[in-house]
Amino acid sequence: MTSMARRIEVEGGDVPLPLYHRIYVVLRQQIAEGRWEADAAMPSEHELASTFAVSRITIRRALDRLEKEKLISRRRGSGTFAQPSGDVAPIRQNLSGLLENLLVMGLKTSVRVLDFSYLSAPAEVAAALEIPPRTTVQKSVRVRLHRDVPFSFLTTWVPEDVGRKYKRSDLARRPLLALLEDAGYAVSRADQVISAKLADTTVAQELRMEVGAALLYVRRQVRDPKDRVVEYIQALYRPELYEYHMGMRRVSRSGKSLWSAEAESAD
Image 1: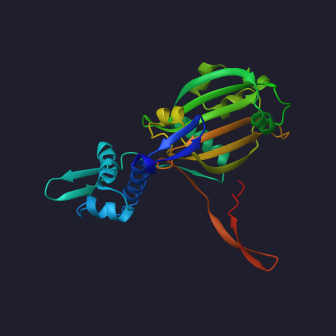
Image 2: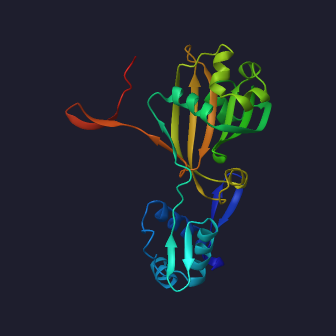
Image 3: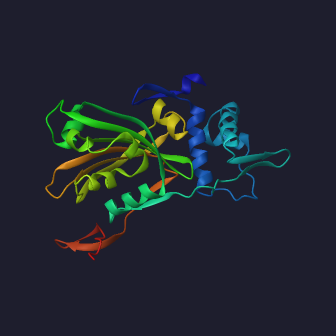
C-alpha cells in the first residue's frame, strides 16, 4: 500500500501522508461527531475495507491508532466500539469582542515559551507589520495549553521598539496583549484571516499530533489607536480543541438578502 501513500507539501518539506492515516483521520472525526452509539458496534474491518476501497491491513492500522488513543475499544467476539473522549471541551472564542476574549483566554490558560529572539523581518512579516523589509523585529514562539493539553502554536512578531519593553520571562507569565498595554501601547482593533494549514514536524510534536494533521490557521494584525500595527501573529490551533463562534443575521442590501455578522453592542 506504500504506492497509495501521497505526499503533501507542508512547512518544513515534503511529508508522507499514508493512506491508513487519512482513514484514521476520517474515522476519528466520525467518532467525535457521534456517528456510532457507545453500545452499538462499529462496522467490521471487512465492511470498512469495502467502504474505503482498501485492504483490511490498512483498516487495521487505522484502528490500531484509534485504539492507542483510546477512541475505540475492541471486544473479542463483540466487535469494535467507539468511545469518544470528552475530557477536554473545545475552547470557544467569539469573533465579537475579540481582543477582550483573547486577553481573558490568556489568563485562563498556561503557556510555554519556545523561542524569544530578535532578527530581520521576513518579507511576509514586514508587509504585515507595515515596516521596511529586513527591519529588526522581535519573534516569539509559544505553545498555549488548557488543562495541560496543548491546543495552540503561536508565532508572534512585534516591532523592535515594542518588544524591548518586556522580557522572555514576562511573556511566560502574562498575555502579550496585557504586556503591550502595560508598556503604553493601547490596542484598539485587529484584522484577521482564518484558514487551514497542515502540521509540520515541529508543530506536530509540540501539539501532540500527527505530521500532516489539519489545523486551524489564524493570521492577525493588532493595531493601536493611531493605526500602527503593534503585533502580527500566526496561530495554529488543534481544531478539536479550539473553535470560533460568529453570530449572523439576514440583512437587506440593494434589494438582496445577505448574511451579515452581528455587531457587538457598545456599552
